[in-house]
Image (cartoon, rainbow, N blue to C red; front, top):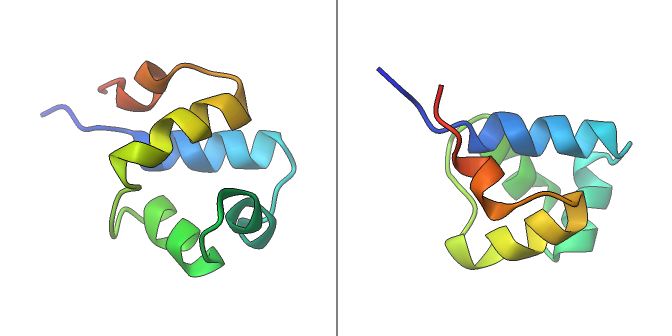
Length: 68
C-alpha cells in the first residue's frame, strides 16, 4: 500500500534548514503544535499552504505528494 509522505518531507526540509518547529511555525503563521501534528501525521497542512511551503523549502508542490 502506498502512502503520502507529506509529513516526512516537512520534517526533512525543516531540519535541513535548521528550523525548530516553533521557528518554522512563526514563518508559516501557524503554531508549533500544528507543525508537530503535521510531522506526527495527526493531520495535514491545508492545501492552500503547500505553495508557501514549496517556496520556503525551494522545492515543488509535487515533492510533497510522492508516494512510497
